[in-house]
Length: 241
Image 1 (cartoon, one colour):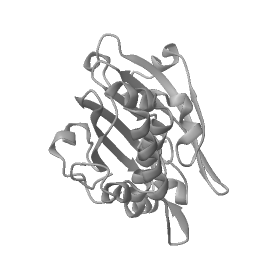
Image 2: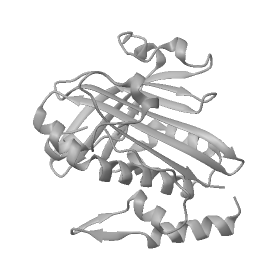
Image 3: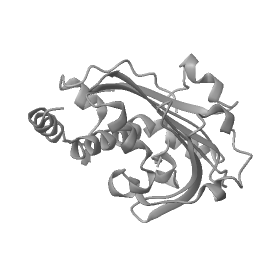
């Protein structure tokens, strides 16, 4: 991507920031409507989780039930879900480097206060994860990610088992169950369309233990997910060479 195109893209994102209900918000829909992106359609359903407002925050991971047939194999009975696909003007390798750098999430992901990764040895202690090693490429990396998310005075911490599969262009995370939720699984899949264009598929499936938190997540997941994806887009612009 040329430097002039990067500057134009950066200005477009900066100019897309607006005030919404008294809160600063940059959503993927606003960027799309600016004419910069040729994005595929969004299928509502359920990364960095929380209490009250935290129940709707997670950068690894509503609206209505997920109706995307391609994601049904990852859902459990009772799960809610959210899926979204978008085409971005960056190479697959560049976008993959942003999504897979979990340790840096605290620097740019909304509401992520702290992100820490642990060794593959620690990750191997959680064989109950539905993420099967034989489903990943031979060179896929596996580790635990401990994320702390917060909003105001509210804060929540959870740990996910993460598989980073560069060959398949996938980053999949499944949270270790906590009293807050029974299940939380997110995935990013990046497919190259051309040297400087990629399709990004984002999925998150979850089941909260508390029905109140589940209702909160349903009401706000689309907006929160759009803000999160927008943060990854801006990060891609900032780190483009």
